[in-house]
Amino acid sequence: MSEAGPKRFYETVTVAAEDGVYVIKLDGRPAKTPGRHLLGAESQILAEALAAEWSQQQDIIDLTTMPLTRLTGFARDGGEDARGPWRQTILAYAGSDLLCYRAPETGLAARQAEIWDPFLARFAERVGAPLTVTEGIIAVEQDPKSLAAIEAYLDPYSLERLYAAKLLTEMTGSAVLALAALDEDAPAHEIFAASRLDETFQAERWGIDAEAAIREASLRRDFEDTLRFASLTP
Image (cartoon, rainbow, N blue to C red):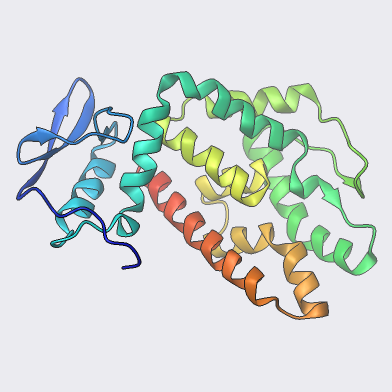
């Protein structure tokens, strides 16, 4: 444990359904988020996983071992008012998606086409949103119909799942890869690797940078935690 957290102040952890939300209770009292909202979830499965994180704490609460609690807290504090901004973040990334911008360098461009093109093709079929690919950094304007299709695809998402989609989009630089991860379109490790394709190519040419490797390992943990969080939400 890198930093001492608060002492465990409760004996029992339970889950109670209240107004359509499964709330975490510590010694019968509702747990709260940092923003003072009830800590809970629309998904009973997620709520049970939250309860498990709290139950597993020892004498000192180690928040680094509670990723689901952290992610749920941010989602609950964002609330329904955050849905619009989260959707717009995802759509902004889709408008300049990582997978749509190809390197002018032949070797890297060939690998991008090999790995990224199948994701784009399946995304177009699954979401109904074909995206245009370009070379270099010249901006390309995506079809508004495709962006509208993506927005409609996000509409049924629960608050927690939409928050996860926003985070995954930011982590990968790609709405296509984020939704592929949520839809289990490919194994998670392949999706993460696809998001790091350019960095991997450069590391193969010039060698691995130690600090970059540490940052990537941290990003991978966040990606895996967020994907697990999403898997427990509707």
